[in-house]
Image (cartoon, each protein chain N blue to C red):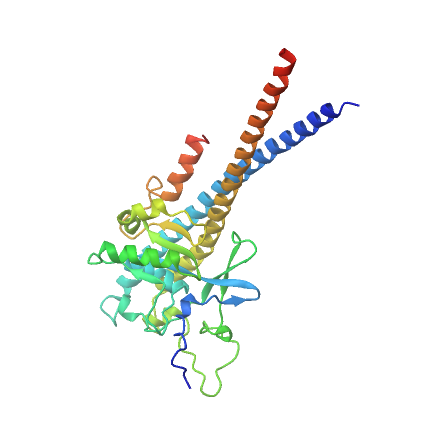
Length: 195
Length: 137
């Protein structure tokens, strides 16, 4: 048996596994970059079409009523679209609709009518701008809602990208220290042999 | 009865809400009126009783310090997962975005009504390209 030989084999296997892990992390990082760019392009497209429809809606409404401005924002509002973050894995986020049962106020689909002194303050945010709003405003709302889903995908990809790159850097540092340790032990073993 | 030495209640946005074991968080928006209105229509807007909001409407009269304060506030406060900022606003506080490297909240640059999206100015894209081109020394 050759204990130093088996140790060398173990070290080689460990080194190869480390190299494989480095390649995997780099591959995952590049995949996340691709996912981020795809999702971000969808966000950009959704914003562009949403803003265009908003301009059309504003033109359609003209001077009728108060238009579509910040003056129509209510004094109190509660977000109906929120993000749930997995506490164990912060790179996993999901978009969720929050109904009034959870403390917010509902959209048009309230599950149960308010009872007693309960007050459901608002419904669909589009109602801030009037009851009969132009179709372009609804289309704009749909575009931005679609964009929200892409925002969450892009955010997930961005966080995953940072995590994979950090792990890649850590593994690379580990590989460098192993290489340096192997080089110094080889040099130390060669010196007594030379003597 | 209120105890005189009791601490004041924390603002709603600072409390960590949970639902089904997961942490709830908001999406913040910094941008021009059209962009903010659009995302508010989608349902992300929140204004508390203490008048704290998760969006900032930037007009030509808005000072750079207000944008800086809003960005710093949104990126350091608990309960925020994503900060959307239009690229024209991001250009005014580019030094803050270049230094920002936290995981959460994620900061995404989006186009505004007047300026289309330019990937060469996006801090995240520039950082990725730098990592890929420069490599690991």
